[in-house]
Length: 192
Image: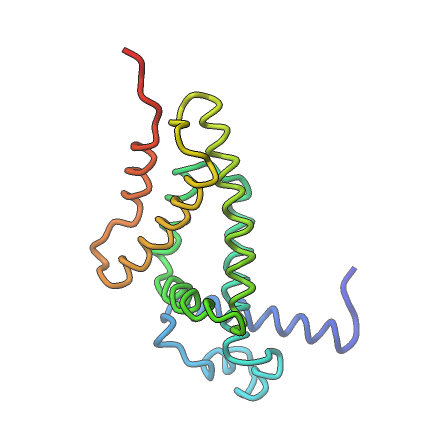
């Protein structure tokens, strides 16, 4: 049931702002996007836009949260390299959101930053999905099992995040190939 009254309208406007910000950052980049442009597309002044968020950093954090929620909906089941390749391609198609992610990831190391909780939650959610996938593939005999799946999951997540940073500084970097390479290295040896 939809909420009525001022609270429901406020939530709807906040969602609109997040969707517009996602589109604008994806199209124009993190550095090139003015929050005034987001406000104008939402028919708000800049102070009006900021009424819906605690700070600029809070708005940017909520944009990343919305991006992650959208990605989770599209990739409900983790399917290993296939899922990674798809997510990485989405990043290549929206470099402004990758820029925002990397910038906010660095800022999130400060426990008082609004993005700190987002990144802590993000990794706490992602690693178990990757771990479960790796464990299943190990049980099937498709992946080497001399390393614990939890440690391999941390490596895969670090690889995916790290290759995005490299790509931002050199767009000739193939973000998908390292994922395929690590999965090849993890493949169980075939019996002769």
